[in-house]
Length: 247
Image (cartoon, rainbow, N blue to C red; front, side, top):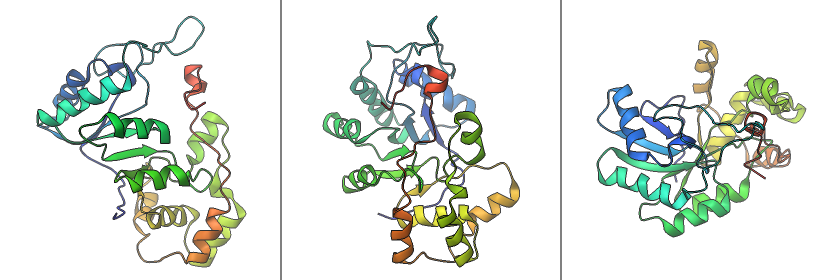
């Protein structure tokens, strides 16, 4: 499997949680907004169907206790078959999943007619998820790291997460290669044969993110990074939704 680096993707969209029962309508709404005839890739954003709040909206309905309103009438299998219909209709070239663990990925492979092309997950040096990454790759599913730098400042502020950018072992590696810690993380992700999609609004960092093809981490340094894994998830939507979807 060939790893690629994507700073942005112009025709990658995701099905929001509240549109699981309205897959075709939601996809067409996205196409209309983007002024496109088809999408290259369409992902199920989270493995949960929630109360419908209107096609194309990204609101999350909460009950009076502040807990996410989960729709128990729509299974992930039903959602996936609707995603497959998009391929048949020519609206989407490839479909995929996001935030699926090993067991949900296994189930999707079992009931799918069109295999998921991608599983987009949080993975970085502090949350390496080696078993999930290897499982997906073994079954021909490309792993995309949506938080390859560990969420950095955003997740530290929103969720109180610990940033791996400040890890002394990783900072020492950055000095060794005369790179930033972020560049080392991205290079590590590429050498794992994953797709990395860093996010930044700063031009200088966007430029830095491309400067990861002029060096290669040694096997010893790859092994060193493997040992800093804390199994630490930084993205915790339970803070907003009142329910831990990853429990």
